[in-house]
Length: 513
Image 1 (cartoon, rainbow, N blue to C red):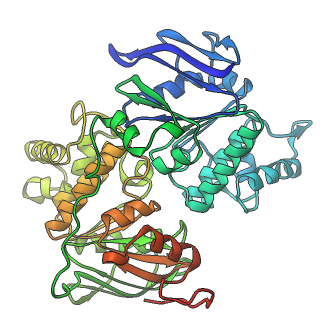
Image 2: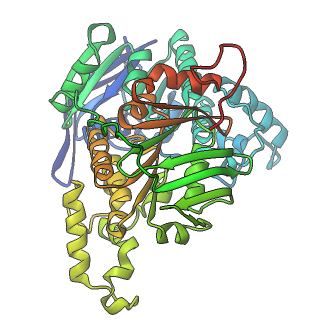
Image 3: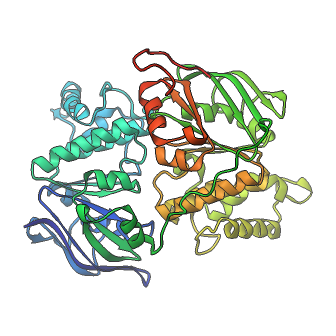
C-alpha cells in the first residue's frame, strides 16, 4: 500500500488552472523525485500534500485514508509529514536549538529548560552532519548550514514522509552527502521521501522513480533504472538541451589585458592572497567546496567587506571600499540570495528594474522626480531583452518564478553600463530551461566586452560555462583550470584535496597563484 497517493487532483487560481488531474503515489521505503520546470505545478502539489492548499477536485490519500477538508500544515506534521523548502523558515535571532524545536520547547512550570533543549538538538545536528554548538544564533550561520538546521527541524517531528523541496540548492558536496545519508536512513526504516531538485545528478543518485510535471499535468512516471537525463529533460521541456551551454570564447593568440587586476586580495578569516585577472570577453569561475572564500571574494570586490591587497582597473589602482566605489568603477554584483539581497520581493518588477538607474531617469538630474516615460521605456526594454515572464511590469517580484527573479536581479544592472559583472550562484534553485537562458545571456554579455566572475557549487556549471576556473581551498587558490584542463575530474580533485593535478599525490603541496 502506498504511504501517500495523489489522485486526479486539479487546482485553479482566479480561473487559471495550474493542476489538471495530477496522480502519483509514493510507496513505503521509496524516494520519488518530482521533476518539472518552474511553473510546472510542483509547489502547488506539495502545498496540497502539506495542507497549505485544498484541491478543487480529486483527493490526497495519506496512510490509506483521504485527508480531511480541514487538513492543515499542523495536522500534516502531526500525521508524520515533514518538509524542508529552499525558502528558510528560521528565526535568525534565535539559536539553533530554539529553531529546531520551535513550538515545542521543553518547559517546567512555565520556564524553558534550556539544557534539555540543547541536549535534544545535539543528536539531530549530528544526524544532518552539522558540527556546531546548538546555542549558536542561526543568523551567524552560512546559508548552507541554515538549510541543514531546517532539515534537523523537520526530523525533530520524526516524519514518515519527508518532502525536500530544493533543500540542497545551497549545499556543498559534503552537505549534500549528509542529506543523502538521512534519506537512506528514512528509506531503511520504511519512511518515504519526495525529492524536488533542479540538480539532475542528485535525482538519479537517490530516487527510485521520477514523476515529470509539465504545465500542471503528469507527463510520465519512470523507474530510475529505465530512464536517463535526456529522457527526463525531453519530458520536462519538450526539446533537447544539448545546447545547454553556449560555445566558449576562442583562445586568443595574444593574452588580453585584464580589465580588473586583483593581487593579494585578503579578507580576514575568509581568504588570503587571491590573484585574479578579469578579462573582457571571458567568464572566470571561482570553484571549490562551499565556504572556501568564494563568496567573500565577490563581496570584497563590490566593497561589501573589509579587505586588503591591490586592485587595478584598466591599469590604474582603485579602491573598492564600498558599493558606491564599485558602481562608480562600473562593477555590478548579483548576490547568492536573490530574495533578501538581489531584489525587493515586495516591490514591483518595474521598481526593481529601475532602481539602479534612478539618477539617469530623473529629468535634469532632479532626484525628487522621475521621468515616467523614460522609466517605462527602460523597463519594457529590459523585460524584452532578458525575456522576463511577467503579467505586467506592475507585478510584484515575489510572484515571479525563481528564474525570472534572477533575471530581474541581473537585468537591473545592465542600464548602468557595467564593465565587470560579479555573480554568486547565478542559477541556484532555478529550472533547467531558465538555466540555459542565463548561461546564454552571460555569454552574450561577455561577447559584448564584459568581464564576468562567477561562483557556483555546481561543478558541471563551472566547466560548461567558464573560460577559466580558479579553485579555492581553505581560502587560497590551489589550481587554475582552462582549455582542455578544465574538466569536472580536475576541478573536483583540486576542490577536495587542495592540490593541483600537477602536484605529487600525497605531497601535501599547495600551488598558490
